[in-house]
Length: 64
Image (cartoon, rainbow, N blue to C red; front, side, top):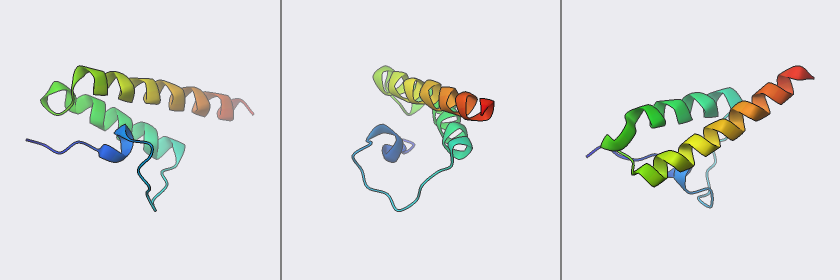
């Protein structure tokens, strides 16, 4: 079984690495693309909500 990206699923996990917005969007898209083979439906929904939020942030920042 393929491993899940737990750092994306659990925001309470501490990480020393910080993604840029574009890196996080790409990472979320990649993980969502792995689909039900790796993630549950609830996890995919959570990842999709995060992706939507980051894409909105990116859109707003690019309007400035």
